[in-house]
Image (cartoon, one colour):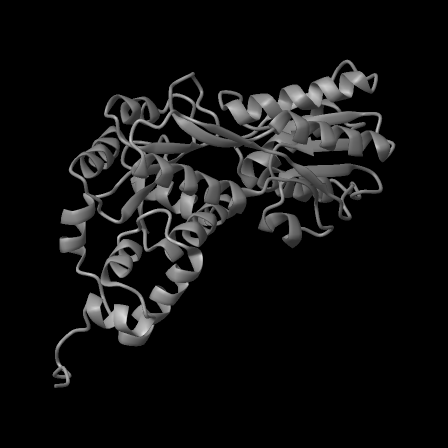
Length: 347
């Protein structure tokens, strides 16, 4: 007797189409590890063919998981300007690359990220409450300021969490990061190879570990090339801050012929100022950025920049988090990626 057409497809229907047992289908649906990849593909194809939709409530009772993770952007917003912080985050090409890497890893595994903005104490409490009540299985945290209390509070609450970038102070939490000093050395080498002798840098916020590492790596590399002093102007990782920093550098050091900006947005701002002052890039001033984000390709000339493999780093962050979710008590782990230099027209 055929099943009435109004009856939703079941695990048994999926198992019959896939040619596997009901238990195998259940293991794939519930995200159990150690299921052969080819069998997973068969089951997912059968799910698509039958239109089976797992009962999330029932699944959660079995797996004790929500099937959701929180993707948290945590920063310091000005009082009453929470929407402004969210707008800055969503407009930043860096965050788009992080989100793309996270989605690319999680979506095939049936896990869904929930975007949360934590820019005030109240917002951080909301994130912690959301996680403590089991609405998400863990958190992927991208923090934009050094004194962010959220990483420590996640550790204290024993909530599975992974950070993008090394925390400002040592805590037992997993993170992914880049060898920022190595990247800055690549930028210094390129400027020296280009014949620059009056080199300056637009640094990122100096309370951020990545900014500190990029500045240290650049200074050390320039010193090895025989340049003991490098003028510095601090920016804030935005195009506008890059403009302001470049104006200061030109006013104080008008003979600059090479600039390293600690991210592409600041390099974009620096380029606008150089062009406004009649400095040709790269003929008069060579310019190197950092990240290899979309502004590097939008600029004219296109930016030579240090590539940070953000999508791969974000996917690894998600992989680490799922490992912590599946195996509570797993020791914290750090994964450090290597930078590469993307040579284009600006240097």
